[in-house]
Amino acid sequence: ALVAEPEPLLSIKWQYLIVDEGHRLKNRNSRCLELMNELRARRKLVLSGTPLQNHVCELWSVLSFLDQTKFGNVDSFLRRFGSLSSGGGTARQVGRLNKLL
Image 1 (spheres, rainbow, N blue to C red):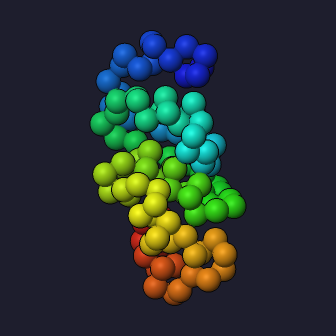
Image 2: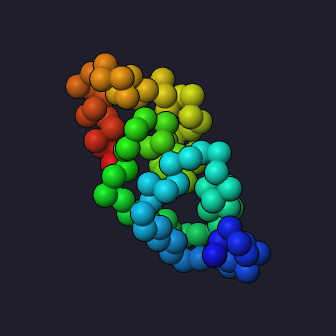
């Protein structure tokens, strides 16, 4: 519904925005994520059984939707956590990422 007719939903100031199947926000270049980022909401919640599917940058897309300031840009996020995708992550990186989740 959002992609098909975004205007009515974008005009509302939401108290809560709850996204089920949040892993669908993983493509940082998708129209859906672009529109979701335009929604104004006081609080946001993302539900997902699989927040990390293939690569850490997919997780950044979801976390950035929740708080664009806290998670910075994708490049800084990948510098902090990118090696987790290749299996080269340290226990410290894993611990920091667990705290975020």
